[in-house]
Each structure stands twice: as C-alpha cells, then as structure tokens.
Length: 202
Image 1 (cartoon, rainbow, N blue to C red):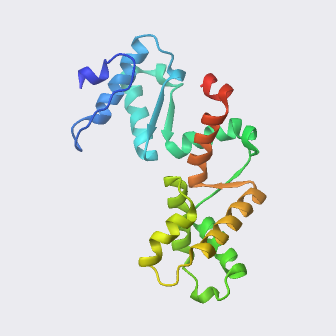
Image 2 (cartoon, rainbow, N blue to C red; image 1 turned 90 degrees about the vertical axis):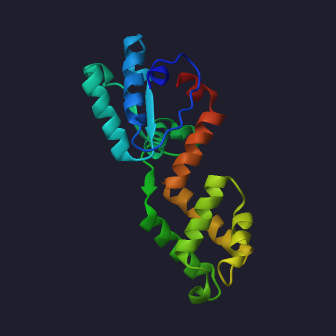
Image 3 (cartoon, rainbow, N blue to C red; image 1 turned 180 degrees about the horizontal axis):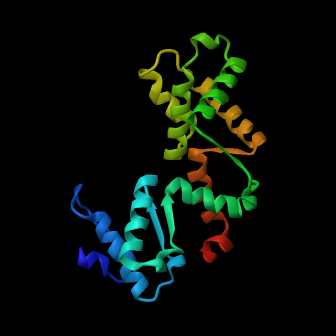
C-alpha cells in the first residue's frame, strides 16, 4: 500500500480483492501528492459510483484537511458531463444540453419504433434496442454488427431495421440537444481526442 501511495510519476496498476484497502491506498496517494506540493485542483479521482466518489473525497479530507477541496472527483459520467458542459460547444453541444436517463432513452426509442416499424408489436422490444445502441457506443462498433449478434438471441431481429431506429434516435438526440449516458463517455473522449487546446489545458 505504501509503495502504491508514494510511487513516482507514470501509470500504476494495483490489482487487489475487495476489502484489501484499495480506497485507503488511493486516499493516502492523494495525501502524498498534496504533501509533495501538487495543487489539489490538478488531481482527478475517477470512480464507478457516486457513493465511492463521495467516500473517497470525505476520507481524503479527514487525512489531508481542507487542502483537498479543489480535487476533481466523480464517476466517469459525471466528469465527462462536467467537461462537456464547459467545452461541449467545440463539438456542437450547448452548455445546457439535456441528459437523457434510461427511461427517457427507452421512451424516445419506443416512439421511433412506433413510427418506423411495419408492425411495432412484432418489433424488437425498445429495451433490447436500447441495449444494442449502448453496446455499439461502448464497443465502438457499427450497430449492424451488434444487431447481428442478437439474431440468435431474439427472434425477428433485422439488423437494417435496428440501424434505421438507431440513426433516427441519434438524429432526434441532436435535435433535442441531448445526450444519453453513453454519449457522455463517447463525446467526452471525442472532446479530448479532437480538441488539442482542451486536452493540453487539462
């Protein structure tokens, strides 16, 4: 733990089972960096859940004190949203863009299916279409490729029809100036890859 907490610059990979003190190690790494003179606003703590982000920040404050107040802490989605609220206009999004939750996403996809499917009752369920769209975004693969994987799982999947729904869903989000959770990650990455000034500033 001490070795990981006090390691020098560069990437470090720590593999450890639940309950072995990974959070404690990260908290002490934050303390070490602050003690070494790194300004807290130059430190980013990324986690998978809001609860973990809060816990890490609270524990860091107990160890380091108020010096950690400037730390960027949150989930991957939260931090991506924060970056996009500030610089999203560089890739075509207004700072006040709407974030679609799962229910919003399913409703939008359901409305599109009703409009484009020959027989909406026989079409693939909106939840499954949403899952396909999400997998395509996360795996960075074409929607037809993902839909073809579902041919064996779900009766009546026609990749071309799924692609049409996905295209209309993408267009509708742009009309609304909205992003779903996957878009936050995809566009956050896009912002960092495409916009040198933002990446260099960060």
